[in-house]
Image (tube, rainbow, N blue to C red):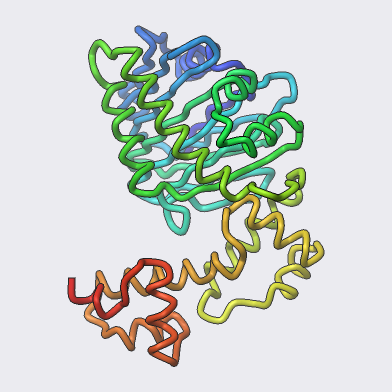
Length: 325
């Protein structure tokens, strides 16, 4: 048994009422409480400013949930979605399933309104998702000149999709915003300040990847192939396919694959694989009794010196120094 909630990429002010209608309840003071027959928790939405909204989904459901968002070209609103899951969920974009919470744990997604998405969640597991929604005009008016590449992306009309990992810094500001939302009488000023800081930190990371490049339009087929490439890299990171082999699998040229991958994920394919390897090595050093040499061999390094250099490149200290902490 599962339940599905559907909505179009609509103006945020209609979203909470639309969700309440499907759940068979009425919103009260900007909040929809989940009926006990379905689970527990709530959906909350607050308007911080004209054309700026923040939404919090904090639920544990008795049934599996599919949350479907249908793309539209008629509404100029952009969601920035922060997922903090206690167990892996899935996101389906343009028909392709992307795990959330396994190799994309605590993820940030920033899609244009042109992209169809579905979010799949397990039953009896807490779902925690924070979304900041702003109109394109609001974003272009408020984004600082130092984020000029983001402004250009919003202005050129090209469909886009950006993925970011939820770093400790982004997590800290997301937690602060959620904490303020949960206050019985939340201050709009304090809420706006937290939302501004969270958006700016996120945009700084995305803007960095866009500097000096002419972005490509992202189409549904492209996203499907990129997610397939991502899946392959996570399943074969010890000995990954070559870029040419990945390009053949994706049905696109090497140059296009490299540009789109870095555009969406913020890392080159090589950098992405290196990050996966070092993250797994760090996990082994933290959670098991393996030696530094064993951790290196587990992620494909026969040369301990090369492993130590790669680990330090990601974490700024050697695996030996890390294992002593």
